[in-house]
Length: 212
Length: 150
Image (cartoon, rainbow over all chains, first blue to last red; front, side, top):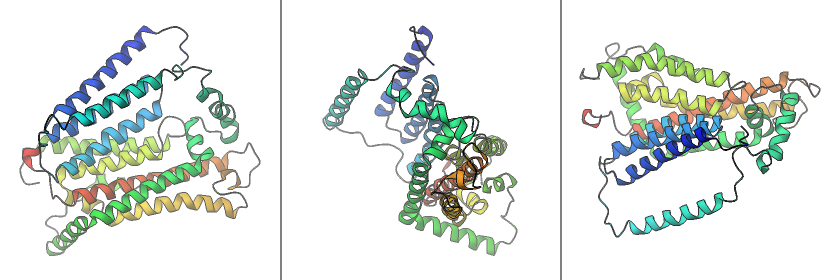
């Protein structure tokens, strides 16, 4: 949306959401219980998803909600179960280095935002270059209403193929590194199923739909 | 599985999982019109199975969706995506040139629609298969979440 005049409501929403992110970030840094940290990082993702929607990046917000809040919370939960439940307290001297790195990075990022165009600025590079071309020609070229889909699937089909391959390779790599636990568990299940023909098999009709 | 003080959790999960799967399919097939697409839908479908695994135990989830299936699903997804590219090649176009799938003139949209639906399906299979493979690899090492962890 073009913002010709300052919008007090949007500014307030931004301040509240970014403030929430800040508070959650501080809480994550201070907590020692890994379970609470995993849950709070899910909340962090959810709040940032809401914030992406507030700045009109709906697709990014959607992905953040699905991947950040859903997937990575579940995977982190699984990873947490493999280790102890609380983090060891660090010596305060050793926290100094990371703190300095964070502050330096933050200062550089804030310095960089001075050069960024305003949200929705029609003259920004993102809106005048190839983005404008996509908006003009996508409908004639593909006849698909959501312009994001032809950009990802059609104009940048090679990129998306590469991304899918990266996800696939990541899955295979993790299975190769850790897969022996999975295999032994699957083996146990198969043996149990053989020894108990009907006792433990409960059909789960809902789950079969996920095969589609 | 054994104790019964998670009964509310289990009932709610059983109600939620079909809704999650349905929503994932909606995200997949509505991607032409609204936000969403194969990546998000794949993750949502994977999360439905993961939720099942967290509440009912990984062994039950592995019975419903075996690890060998998730691995093959990921491979089939990438193959499907790459296959659309070769289909375009065989039709005389360039790799992943959907316009060439049915040898249409510019302005014809049938090939674009079919191509994008197919590659989005490939992304869906690839992402949900890979995500579940990763989850099983982690979760296969611990049988179940202990009660005190909730």
